[in-house]
Length: 112
Length: 112
Image (cartoon, rainbow over all chains, first blue to last red; front, side, top):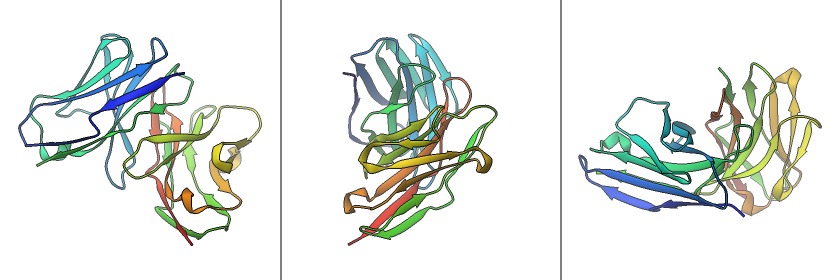
């Protein structure tokens, strides 16, 4: 069966520090991968998605970037965090463009 | 572009009572619709999905949803709510190739 791992679960970082959140999927190949950010009362905002290694689509211009160095690995990064980057970050995957999304357990990021 | 609206931010029901959570969508073609549930600090879990066929869809945990094209709705229902159903519920739909958009969520509180 397929599983998705996302870490860390919580992270407290100072303003201006770098960020790296990692997500990996097991038990499948060539998944579509997604990063969402969730703010209270605002639902889920799509940040990035990837349909293959090295292919990244950005949905929202911002302080963040994403990379997919391996088929089942998706990384969310920032060189310098802002206060506004605080939030709950969710990684998700889908086997095809027509299937549902499967979510990781999320990372609560607090930028202080 | 597709959109999803969940008009109720909060809903409170008594344990054992019936539940209906509303979801309205806009679409350009056949919608792909989903309901997810999220417990605090956790990722999203898929409750059910609608792609085509029978407009009444059964999901996990005793939930069902009905697709009504004439009303552009995909409301989630449960005949008898349990205290463990307290969580936040998100309606979602496909929005273009590879993208999924989510409503802002409905937080369910269950009274003992």
